[in-house]
Length: 107
Image (tube, rainbow, N blue to C red; front, side, top):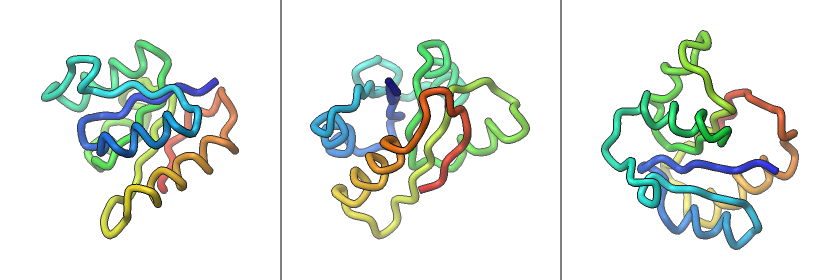
């Protein structure tokens, strides 16, 4: 089953909402990685085989051209979206995602 790692840009209520929907979610706050550079955040998620969930488009440049290994990245556009809308979009994507999908997704 897919496990998510939410970087520090993801709102805690989003992580909590995904947990309530049955997903295993790890956060930067819980991992003690708050303030770590984006490359370290991505490496941390990859070391645990977790999909990284972020609002931060800086991650996109890190994974373009396979510069850094990852187990998938979900970039969510946050502008003008409510917490519930973000949770629903990510949940819907995860329900249709295969466990071996390491692509970059834009929601």
